[in-house]
Length: 212
Image 1 (tube, rainbow, N blue to C red):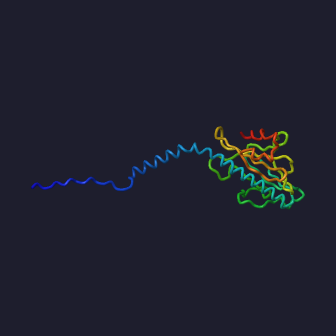
Image 2 (cartoon, helix red, strand yellow; image 1 turned 90 degrees about the vertical axis):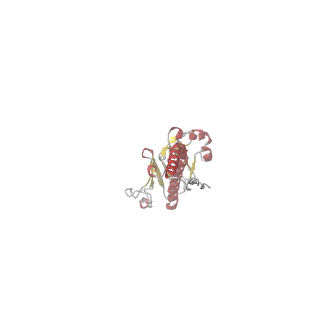
Image 3 (cartoon, rainbow, N blue to C red; image 1 turned 30 degrees about the vertical axis):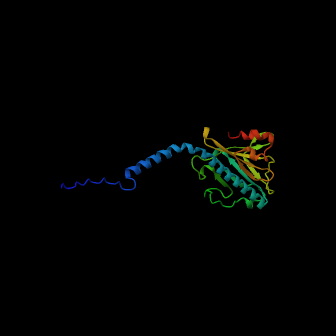
């Protein structure tokens, strides 16, 4: 009887993936990630909204200082340098000129100023910018500052609108910060209709066009 010939069994592939396959996966993921970066640009709206909330918070802080210290405090917007500056505004109370220290301030900033530089805020991508600041009455008038009284309201009886923008062209996004002249409180919203309670009806369309 002829001896039985044993056919070698095919080798089974080890479980898992090879190094080459892993490198291929990593390469594909990297290509997809690069391709998705332009699609993430709509996050510009999140960036400008966050900056607007910071501006509103700082305006509310200036208002709280005015109420607490029974004095006037002013926030001046420097659009050219994309920053704003908080200062005490009553020359009759010089003891209040030195402001509470901010953990985000520069060591070289004067003690009488709290300077917020929007270019240096934590962010992803391009920073939000101060597009313009206006007073809203029968017409829109350019403004550079908001001053708060001991009552909490502003020294001007018209709403103040701070327009922040980011991005360019089709990627441009904006957000508005509106300061109520009576209460001094700042509200944030991209949709001007949400802020209609503070803005005269005949000025809504003009305000809605700001920063477009």
